[in-house]
Image (cartoon, rainbow, N blue to C red; front, side, top):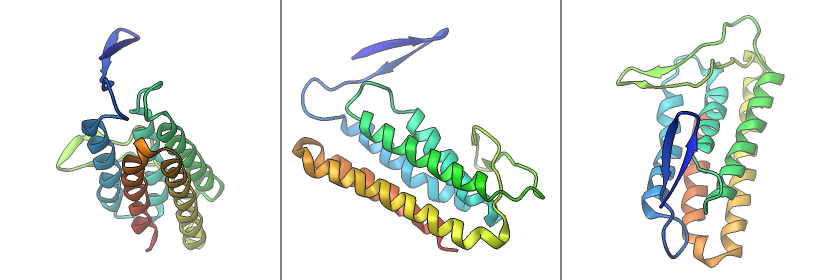
Amino acid sequence: MAAQGIGPGIYTVVIPPNGFGSNAFLKELVSGLNAVRSFCGGLQDESFKVDCLAERLEKISGEIPEGTDYEEVRTVLKKTADKVERLVRDNRDTSKARINMSLAQAPADKTLRPLTAVKMARQFEVNRQAAQILEEATTILLRSAASAQERSNQYTKIASALGSNKVLLRS
């Protein structure tokens, strides 16, 4: 176990003594990726869903401590979030105000930044491109899994959870 200080607080990173990654952390990471669908799916206005996806991926990538077995996953998720966010910015609907979102059943789970809407006329194309960005990220993770046996099973689970979010983009 290792502890790192950030600002006034301390957080603990559990690093298993042997083998790749931690099953508990993997379960939490996969659960977080699977929760994106229900969180962003709760938005009434479809025009915010793509940016919600970007924001959630950014949040999850930020929760993966640096210098752990999941550094590559962290990097892939962050780059994916950045690409999707850039796509949204390039197609934003300036007539709609940015919004913050939280779940009624879990108000503490809220967006870290306001979400940006996509122009209605561009929604189909933006959704298609965002799905393609997710597909590229899952491919990168699956290729990484194939190159290292000890992380194959874990990366496959992470890639599957990430790819399952394409459902959000099919409306």
